[in-house]
Image (cartoon, rainbow, N blue to C red; front, side):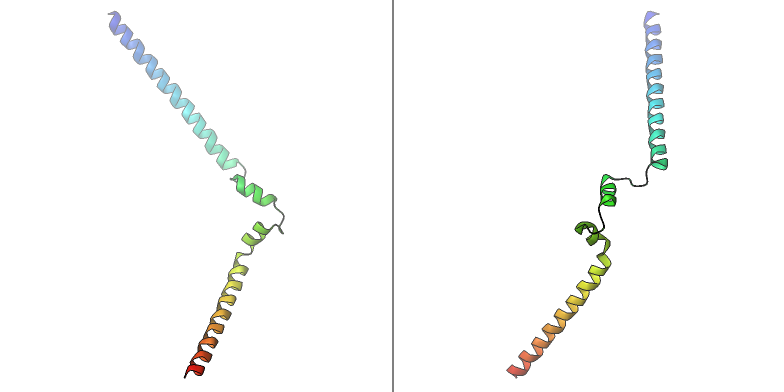
Length: 96
């Protein structure tokens, strides 16, 4: 009889521990969910640091002006291709 009582007691204690652990987990999960929902909009440290940088700071200016940089690069590539074609034409004329 003692063994049965002991087993029942152990089961109750284990069940109580599981319930407490589950309650703590749900509480923590709820707190995290609320923090994400109602917390600051800038989530990462890098975003906060980036927001504090002045607009003239080279990395920030570079990231903000990527479209202008792309357009400029396309123009440079087009000019280089035109120069290469002109060189090829002059080379063919002088060789032929």
